[in-house]
Image (cartoon, rainbow, N blue to C red):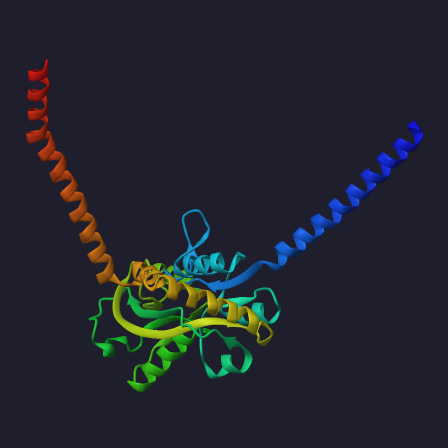
Length: 289
């Protein structure tokens, strides 16, 4: 009888172990399916590395919101611009944030319906140049990102106004700043909203950018668009306010003014309470005694 019970116990334990193994594998597989690998490139304040070495910026905050609505996890992958398309083609990322709709991109990729940002960019210099005098740019060493649509547009712009510069290529925007610091270039392209310490001489409006994926990921883009649309239905100001917190200087000034005003009112109330109300309360308490 004891022997039979032992066999039954062993059999039950084996069943439990098998079920536990299968269940664990299924959970892991489900977790893998629920992770969206998001490709971004360095462009302040859209995507950059913070002081802890983590990917930060508007794109991360925006897609964190989208992922929360979709109930999925996200893995952010920071790449050079030249590697983004290759990463997408090879399946190393599922989507790219900040993709411009160009003839070449339309041939190879699909895009979501809702624009996610307007990527403003600007020209910066370490030379003594007036902001509006483009003729002074002639002969300057111009640092740019070869694969960037913005850089390509700048060259077309220079050509249209008969400006000749000496091109100096880099892989990412921080490299351009280093070249500027080492006095190897005189002029560079960068985000209009970043932490660039050099003189901004001209700012461009920029392009509407979207989320790109391979043609096999249409369903994923549809889910992303639905999540964005749901946010606008529930709270039409959530995403615009997030965008403005990064890129709308006037909006930020108003927010700061409101914060200062609120703090000032609270301080005035506290001072009023201490000077006028507290003595009266003390007199009332003394009389009661």
